[in-house]
Image (cartoon, rainbow, N blue to C red; front, side):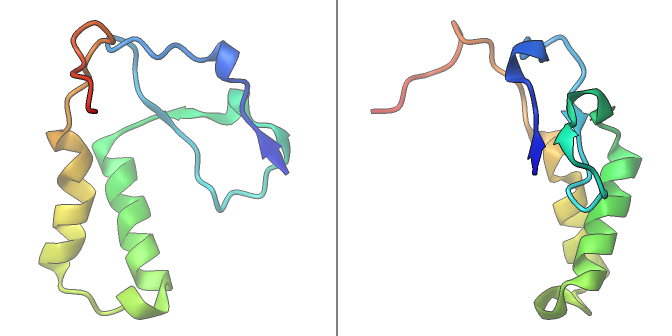
Length: 86
């Protein structure tokens, strides 16, 4: 079992995004194991995931690239800027 201490994280838009490889052999509090997100690291993770997941194996490279690039298209919105959806 792994845990992340959310109280230790800074969710402000200006702080770097952090990630954790869910396949890493870790246990306990993994807060200190979070690494800064990078486009190259995400690309490697997405390519590995597509390659090691039977229904996704053999997906066209264009689809893998689109999936890997998706996070670059998102924008952080500060709480006061966020639009409520009802």
